[in-house]
Amino acid sequence: MAAPPSGDAPAVDRSRDAERTKAEILAVAAHEFADKGYDGARVDEIAAKTSTTKRMIYYYFGGKEQLFIEVLERSYAVIRSIERDLDVEHLDPIDALRSLAELTFDHHESHPDFVRLVSIENIHRAEHIAHSTELAGLANPALDVLTRILDRGRAAGYFRDDVDALDVHMAISAFCVFRIANRHTFNAIFGRDMLDPARREHHRRMVGDLLVSYLTSR
Image (cartoon, helix red, strand yellow):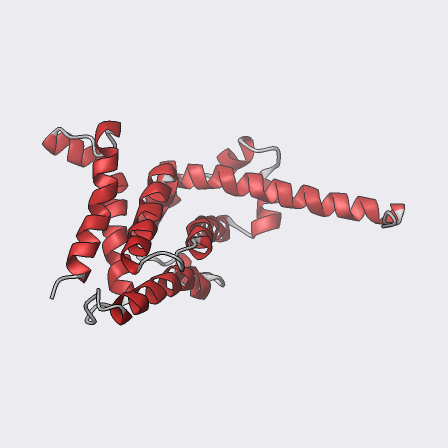
């Protein structure tokens, strides 16, 4: 294949540089917002920790609120992409349900900033994410996968029929988010670190056990 005309190279390079810069800003901003909250994070501090300027951040994102919205969108997109790509169609519905719950468990443990960002946005009553142009697509992958699993489980006679995908998604999130978001207060009150490696596999199995026990009860 012939190489593109040399005159196109600068435009392509500029586009790639812009995408790299935006990705760097979003990565740094995610940590700043997660660490300091929406009100505490400062655009000038985000700029100081990247290879760009405050002026360029405003150029790319329009302002602090839009930057925060895009951070949230990007954070949700990661877990939704993983859920969408999870290959569970060949699994027994019970094993498929466990796989999805364990995937969420692993993701939230390895992405604590995501949990903090969601907690912060709930403090703000979802006022920022409500303005997201990507909001409608943020829920579909998780619910689509769960719906297919539940439908197959009911057809096989395993699962009760009075629970929908959103109920199950809530139950998985409740366990996995609580374990990360409440780690410090739980440890202070009860003296147990929920992220203790010695208990990790116990908790990872536990979330699946809880779901399966409930969904197979009559």
